[in-house]
Length: 271
Image 1 (cartoon, rainbow, N blue to C red):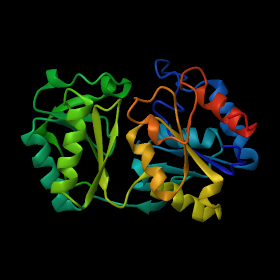
Image 2: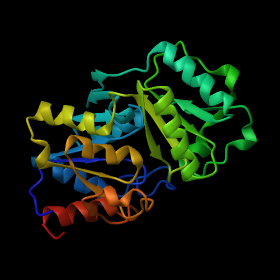
Image 3: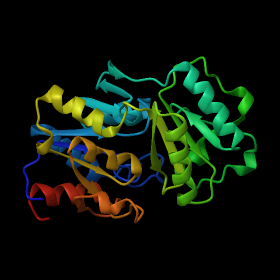
Image 4: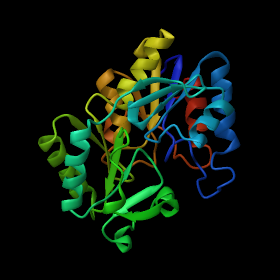
């Protein structure tokens, strides 16, 4: 992969956010500095499943990114949070999907909002930093009158079971697509036209950059879809084994400035 990339699209959780246990500084100085350095002459762009929250938007400003890809490409904004692309799950589909997930007694969130809807609070055992911070509410409290871009469903015991759920959803609801995340134990569900690959391509077109001159760094199932749009893909070394074969390159472990180390090597053509 000896290329002079013009744009780096970078995932957050498990990739750029390398010290999530530090609530005041969840991203190391090494990672912040490499992002700022790239943005001086090239483009370092956040491409995440997260929403365009204050945390994400403040981060974009801090590292001088022009654009942010959120909700796996369902929501794309500029650095001032002006919406450039907005893909929704149609209203009737949101109700159908809600009923489907609840019949399976699964936990879920909407749009990255910090609420987990569940039929049993004790069943919420996902070992992810964000899950510990979210409040929990019964199914009856969910508000589907809002616009919905993304569901996140979890509660199954294994990666295989979650993969089977993904197949079932995409068969039953062909208008939707799924992405395996959280070490294979969660499933992101979006409009079929939303993916990080589609989002990255949208930004490349805005910047007039060919996709062959851009690369994506990530660690989850929602990152591998960038291959559909012909992006080079660096999979972080902390990714689950089933994800790694999709990468053009295995980068560093995300901890302790893994993104900074990986990009530095790419910039020096050391891979």
